[in-house]
Image 1 (tube, rainbow, N blue to C red):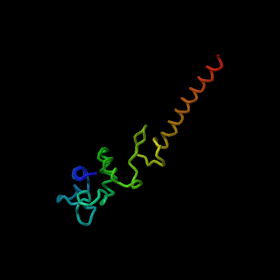
Image 2: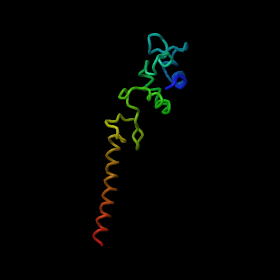
Image 3: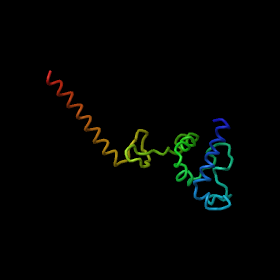
Length: 133
């Protein structure tokens, strides 16, 4: 990633923190209460994008902007933090156990039953068409 894109991303992250982070807004002097130096870690200049990571920002503020979250998470090494995955049916956040998981446990059972019903219906149609010939 070139320097211009990195700077743009850092600015977008700082804007999101300034507007949405409770720790950033709590102090009228615009000082973050989570760090010792009283600066938001998003604003501290580092060589790499992942030099400073605020767990509160990652967990609570960043999911508010999914596009920015995906852009930011592209800079992390593989396996650092899995991207937030949402269930396709109920849209709740899940932590996938493998790379193919699409549903939470409750919705997975319902989806499996629906797929089984469709699969059995196709199978019965095929077997009935063979018997009539």
